[in-house]
Amino acid sequence: MEPHSFIGIKKEWDIVGARQLGREIARKLGFGTVDQARIATAISEIARNIYLYAEDGKVTFETIEGMNHKGLRIIASDNGPGIDNISQVMEDGYTTSGGLGAGLPGVKRLMDEFDIQSEVGKGTIVTAVKWLR
Amino acid sequence: MRIPILKLGNYLLISIQMELDDKTAIQFQEDLLQRIHETGATGVVVDLTSVDIIDSFIAKVLGEVVSMSDLMGAKVVLTGIQPAVAITLIDLGIHLQNVQTALDLEQGLMKLHQELGE
View 1 (cartoon, each protein chain N blue to C red):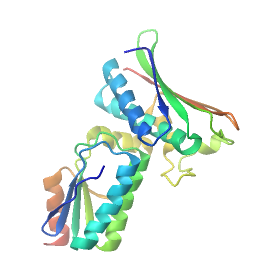
View 2: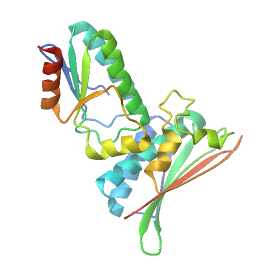
View 3: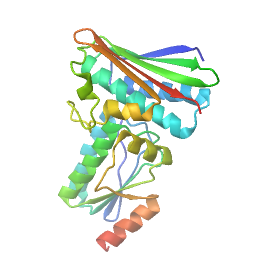
């Protein structure tokens, strides 16, 4: 596996493609089935955000090496409208899409590290890391 | 892609064996309600044994299927939710309250028999 792989998110089916690729990379890295499901679910949520709000973007996967452990970094980036109020989208239950509002706070709970950067009119970058235990 | 819906007496059986994308999930919602309408089914078992991911969107669609079927007079039981799926749903903060579940297809059918007394 290459240390960097990415998948473009343009069509609805790309959400499935992204989570399948992410799960496969996680499995090869040695993540167990529960963490594979967590990672695949987190990817599904952030890829859907790109599809719904930005229409075009990508999800990049990087394997990372810490001092004595490995991990998987997922970077979802888009050139969409950006998010005006990040603290609002990080509230449980907040939704504009008619979903369950589990999106980003859910991703934060599924992963070990989470970061979001956004600029209105420029786009959004969500970075999430899961460490291999 | 469409998910096959089988009829067994007064019940409908669905075993989801494919990767669920948003369109397939919505299509399934419509197909199931249409089949309940056509057959007058009183119970539905949706088996999720082969489903290895349920994200917030798919959870929402499944929750809605249960409420919509209930409005039409059919009880839905979800069966076979994998351990990893149960863990990720709770991590996501999704509790699927008011949804009947059972360990597997067999137990799901037993639950319907008990509830509906048929």
